[in-house]
Image (cartoon, rainbow, N blue to C red; front, side, top):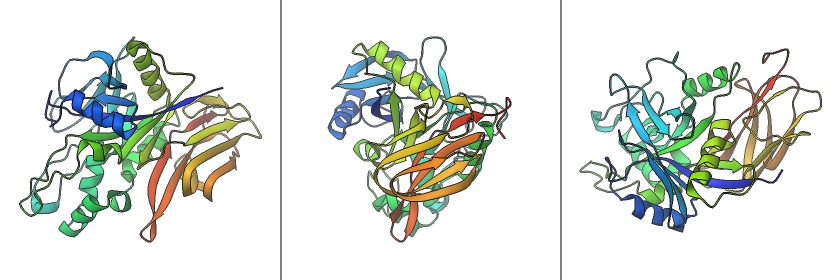
Length: 328
């Protein structure tokens, strides 16, 4: 099956809510950066029809805060039969530096949305910036100092997959704010910088349509199906599939002896095989092939060596291989 890989920047705020650039200006920057899809989620704004802007597919959803606005922020992305609802910045912490800031932790995990924002750039920055020195490090070299996904959120993601498909995306949460600090009066995470920081890779099962509504439907369907990966830094060229069927990530299928998970990366990394939340294999290089020993929620992570340790790079959505009606 021929596939097309797209780079998407998801969870963007523009001047339509509390962002600092217009949609058109952000799209122009995305075209220069090689980003194919922008998913805008301005706060409490109505959805708008998708469109091509500077050759970039612009999808207009919304970020909603339900009940208490401190909790349960949801990304609502339009699609034909009903919106795709993704939990935004789960377990989001307050900013520790200076004793200011606020967090948006999820209170009720019994409410399971259509998907989860496994990476969120602003949450990762806040978690990493526990001291002023670490804050500067995260700002100057985020790919070397940002932490991996929150362990509890990662564990819940793996656990939910035991019973149903639950795709993950990477969220930029891009506003292009300044630091708000007198000791560092800079606009440190501009929109172009977000485009090089946290993105979602999306695999389409065929070419992208020319009409924006049809193209948006293809992209949202791929995200909902889990044909995607979360990336910290550039990862275009990542491929992952299941042999001998040739299935893409996000698929549910019965486990059969001889199944093999294969992955190809655009750079050297430690490639970890994860089964139901437990690392069960590892390989170093640009490619790996793992034999799958039985049913389970199987996925791969890639970690790059930066400044003396392995740092998170690519987390691919799982394959859900069932046995006797369940994952074991």
